[in-house]
Length: 100
Image 1: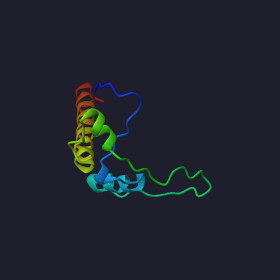
Image 2 (image 1 turned 60 degrees about the horizontal axis):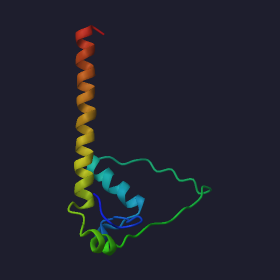
Image 3 (image 1 turned 135 degrees about the vertical axis):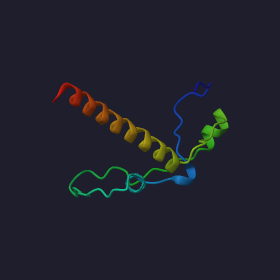
C-alpha cells in the first residue's frame, strides 16, 4: 500500500491487543496442541506488551484491518498445515515410486 504519510505507522487489531503469550495460546487452540513452556527468568525481560492505537493509520490512509487476528491466524495455520502435509505426501509418493 502506498500513501503520502511520512514515517512508520504501526498496525494492530485494536480490539485484539494481546501479548505474545496470548497469541501463543490462540495458535495452540487453533492447532489443537499445548506447547511445553520453559522460562528463563535470568533472560532480559523486554517489554511486557504493546498496544496499538490505529487512529493514525485510519486518519492518514483511510485503512483499517478487515480480518480479525484469530481468523487470520486460523487461515494462515491451515494454509501452512496443508503445505506441509502436501509436501510430505509428495515426498512419500516419490520415495514409493523410487523404491526407497
